[in-house]
Figure: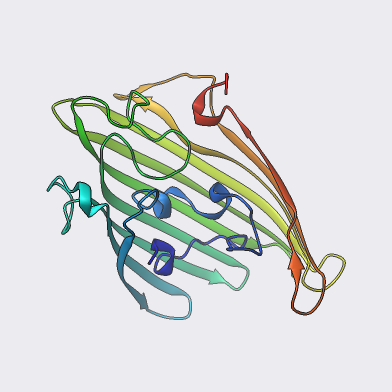
Amino acid sequence: GAPEDVISPLNPLESDSQGTISRFGRFNPLIRIASSGRTSGLAVAGLNFKFSDKVSLELAYTASNAALASGQGGISGGDTKIAAQFVFKPADVLTLGVGYANAYTFGNTLSSGLNSDSIGASNANAAGISGIRSNTVVGSLIWDITKKFTFNTWGAWTFADTTGTTTASTTFTSWMAALSGKDLFTEGDLAAVMFGQPLYRSSVGGVATGSTDTPYHLEALYRFRVSKNISITPGVYFVFNPNSLSTN
């Protein structure tokens, strides 16, 4: 399975083929951390408590990478994550979400697939680091400005600490904002532009990095309906300072 089978992405542009064309445009770190690059598959268990039409609580447990199990994470000892998200819809045009995830990932990586996500050195197998324990908090908002136009955004903070003989801590930040319009010219059309910051080391050991190599992502797309059963979604995106290096 996948975390988004249980935890709502809270992103109207999230789609396998009908919305954003990038990984960053689809999912925030709450969903992505401890979820990527695992050829052995991902196991997911979850619950969704719907208190009313306006309030729900989503809970998920994921496990992967059991072949590299270190015995430090969850039931399988590999990469594991426990996540919860509170979703509140105070009005028909507004959806709010607050999420939290506690994860353990093997090696010097958050296993997010979102920019450089190691602690300190970029080497995923840095000496003395057996894994990373992380706590992630995400806030999300979807606002239907009109029947045609929607604004959505999210912001995330991840507080990570190494396990093993090397002790280090890092704070990662990430955010995204998007404006989309549907049925602008014909029924089924969708136009969108989004801009944000992929996962970025904002501080190391409690000290701000002050780096000018902050990564940014700019994307635009336009889905148009060819027929009742066929649509095409051309899109383009630019990544500035990929992997947090201006030379890239």
